[in-house]
Image (cartoon, rainbow, N blue to C red; front, side):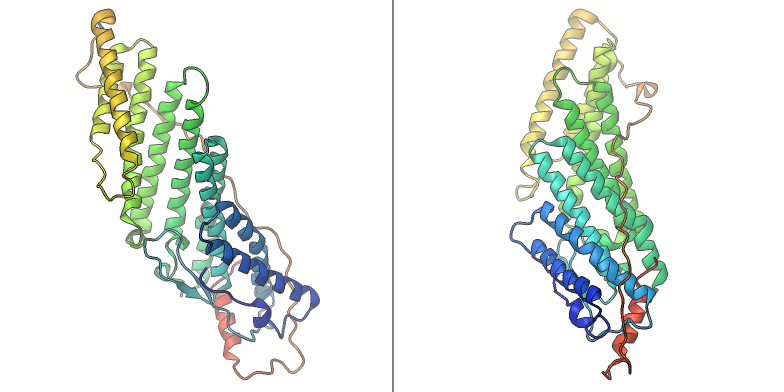
Length: 385
């Protein structure tokens, strides 16, 4: 959100009903608070969520009011909503007069705010809370991809995804829902690992496999449905996701290997752990100036751990168990299926009642009636109940 607007001034003539005026003033105030939250020096995900939640019913109610009373939905001055993407590398401002555009971007603020809150929770070790926040964030993008954005696109032939922030496209919203669920499942893995005692390695292997599937879904959707939006993203985003996918592939094999060892399939465990180590060693080092460079130490430590564990497995097998180690891990012994533990938290808009818009006797006392026509056009391109 790069500019403020005034619903009170724009609907000054037709919005004189006391209840309507109250909502218009509240919309102006709440939108301003959301604007302040988004432009803060240090952005708080929780604050963005809260401010977006306060403003969303207002813009929804105004939009519904115009939709059910198009003949009196006249403007005294233009409403131009301008937003920048929250995920692009060099976001340019995108402007539109469609009320639906402002509401869609407000929903996106909620989703990204929940995602940011989830990240903060994960850093604090609150993995269960983080998983719940990611599920909520995924639910918003799922709602936009399956419900809101298709309706908007269907109603308006002038709605071009190239003229909108990347996250306001159907494909990107669908892909982001998958990515956020993958993040949520990583929190589930962390939750299992911090519990006292020996973890359930078989469960962890299947959870990691589920994360891989979500990440692959993200890539597939982006390539097929949002190829133009990919170019707007910082390349480091996809470097990080490729890194995460490789890590999860290695961890899935690692945890499966641990489960096999515990079930006394020693030779199979050694063969699969060697595969996990090969995947890990295939991850290239980050460039010196890469923002992902801080991850290098963790990667080095994980490689060292797997190398040491493999050495211990091999020593124990050669001196105690004498189990045959296959040169290639049997395909029939691989995991048959993943586990998708994280589910989308369904998202819906709050029900609202239309406001009274009253055209005074004699109509609007202004000559620029094109504003009314522009509003009608924006409504036609911006709402389907």
